[in-house]
Image 1 (cartoon, rainbow, N blue to C red):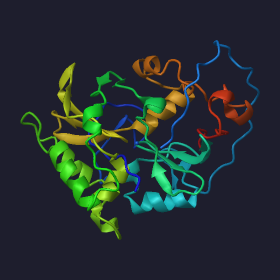
Image 2: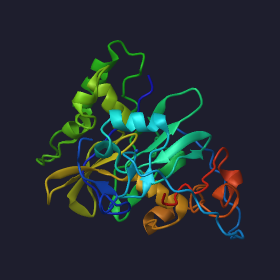
Image 3: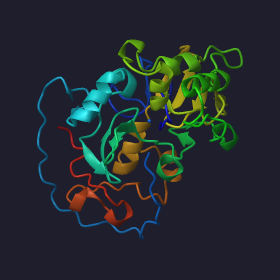
Image 4: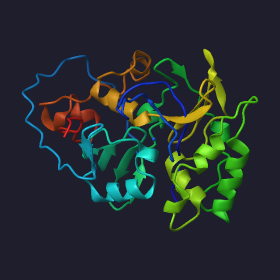
Length: 305
């Protein structure tokens, strides 16, 4: 079994409308690809031809006027619906596209992928070769802790679901430094229990968050914020509202790709990444440097439908 991420509560504000998008989403019931990172060629701006008009989407239950995107790919729609919908993923913020050889769609909190011969799963956005950021939009998150990450039970562990639950109980707290961060409750309530028709609830939530890769920690510049890092997300507790939310990592990665609205601190950390400002409307595959992102076609991917 392949597991590695979950949901969160509380974070700074930034992209996507939810009605108004801030890279932190409200805690309603509630973001593996690995890419080689070549060095970008010297800064040269490609000649951009007029981008062809992108087709509009059907206005039905799969279309979200909040962000002007539709979930077209049937497996993505079924996955979205069966794991909590908007409460878990946020709204879609892209069309269906091809990214690193897999069918892909961006949501506010996650990026969903389906590769050949596999089912749908969230992309590990915090992988070192994707978006290994520790500071985004002025917020400083805990560093990845290899020692903690290495203690997660392997899929072949006997009574795996029980081992996963025991691990989470010891590494994902409900309180931190006297604060009711509710990280464990947030994790376990990401996928609504009534939607889990087979398998243990803990494993469904593991799909969304993955295992913890840091202990909880205060933001070093703001003790009103507490974060915990997971394979597929970052939880954020705010003392001012006593609420826990998930950082909108899908929105942030979209901003990296498009170069639109990317926070300066995130842009600085992504310098040299093949993904930074890669989106080029009007160019082949709508890519500025296609040789750096094999198996990727972002044609009209971020154009409203």
